[in-house]
Image (tube, rainbow, N blue to C red; front, side):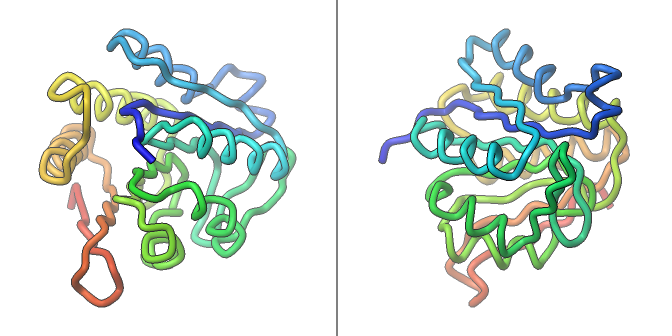
Length: 198
């Protein structure tokens, strides 16, 4: 399937975030439109809705999936407190990630267990996200900066070297730490890990 260099955003926040208008995904969507992009934004509250949004992403042909949610070392959580561990998350995501990139704006989720569950089985290009907790104001400005820099340089595609370079620059600028797992034939695990912002 030929994919389009567009971003599909799925967001699921806590009720307090909703009440205070902390919609990171909506902010990213507006920035992308300024770049002439056509982002798709879906807000979901349950695991079932999340699953359906991921299926919509798969059918859309969009190349980049951005998930904004609360997470921890074991998985993510929806607005209605549906916990989705890595096994369940992989089962939902993997059929739709071949030759695509996954960006996760969720605290502490992006580490070796997630990469192992996703990359070798989905054949996605990469998984990117913060190592530890990141507050809303940081997350919004960091992600907006990443997408701005990437699409300003090349609106048609994201390549490994440029993505790594831009991620490193943004991490240094905002003093945040990201993990970047990139698909690779070697080592045997099927991916290479880059720790950025140390």
